Amino acid sequence: LHDNVGAGLTEISILSELTATEVSEESNVSKNLTKISDLSRQLVESMSDIVWVVNPNRDSLYELIVRLKDSYSELFFEMGITLQTSDLEKLVNIKIPMDVRQNLYLILKESINNAVKHSSCKTITLDIAQINKKMKIEITDDGSGFKLNQIRTGNGLYNMKQRADKINWKIRTDSEIGLGTKVTLEGKI
Image (tube, rainbow, N blue to C red; front, side, top):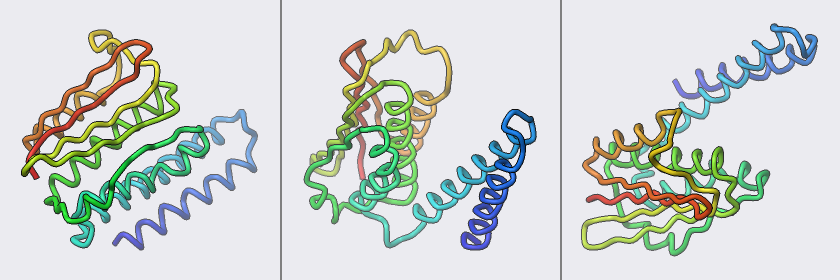
């Protein structure tokens, strides 16, 4: 299923990009083709994430962090952002159930997306500590920060909270103007 749908969506993306270059850039047709191309690329990425999450060979916290790093490496390079992690090897034997893996992955992606889109950061740090059977994950950026009570648009923080609640984890977001943002996740594995 993944191969067939992924190949089809990739072909749609490529064909719409090629067609858009043949049409005047100012026309609605070109804009719509660009939207089609972007949407198909996003769907291919989402499908790849789903296949990765359900793969039982990818059940360690180490695999989750490596997947996260790999999926952002090109974007970080282009934007001049550094993702700092340490001691990833200690995470190899920490197995996490599929529902926890999926929700953690999506929470961490949302945190990174927020940092990239809104903070103008240059460094994102991912720290992970295991205390008995509990994990503490902190994702911190050195960006512009924001006032939590002045968030106007989007569902990012709300969705992260909902996902954390689904797996019985606690999530806290701390931010201060000029000092960046830190998202802290804590829960049992």
